Length: 289
Image (tube, rainbow, N blue to C red; front, side, top):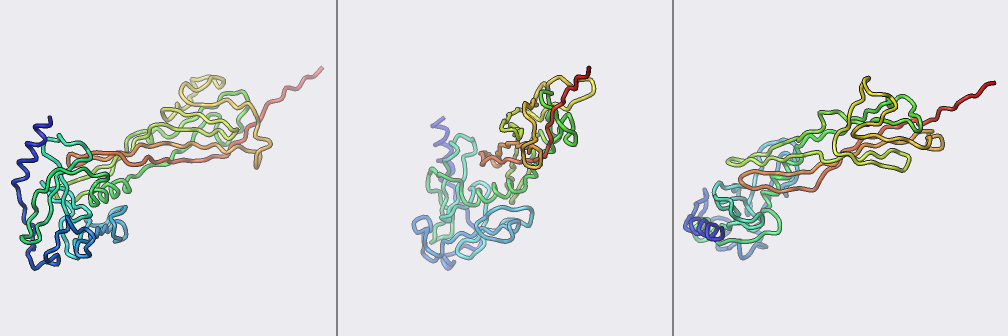
């Protein structure tokens, strides 16, 4: 596999791409941004209209295409075959065979004398190139991740009774993978949010984690039978709690992944939650003679 990786790199090393409007008279002059990344003429600004037009390439919810500027001049954020613009003014891409580890990239930098992109070798990056990171965040920010809608039996509007099993569940449509994409010419990044677990905080100091949305109660089940997947049996009433009710919460944990252009990765997870106030009481037996 190592031989294939370096063979692919050797083929790319012979390639040169000429960016439009590049010449020795361009704003860089004789500045080599790969060696002098702090020079003001090497400043990278990523403008994402979906993020209110701010620079830095943050999040987004729509808007127009992302725009990248190097030294004040518009340049491609992504160059097909050469990769993503980095914070040093160089482009970072992958071999066509997919043999490179996730943190390794083929590096191409601008030759200030000719305005050409020239292969610089294989490098390791701790974080993705700045423009790739911006596209990932744009795709992630456009995910429409639903909050859970809590349902129970007995119903939320009815008093729960101690020592009688309660069934908990959320809307079935929540429990699926939700996707969103962000695109530039030649590349699309797709983000995915997948629910992994739901933690129910009963309000009485206990909690339970379930691997799915729970099972809706139907009339065919006995009111005294526990849920086969997710539920609770209260042992204390809510009489002494604030307002005489417990605060029930359902918190859904989501894993966030992304992929595109032969790349993939993960982002920090997200939690969506909902609350409901419930009364828990007890039934008293009355003995008469």
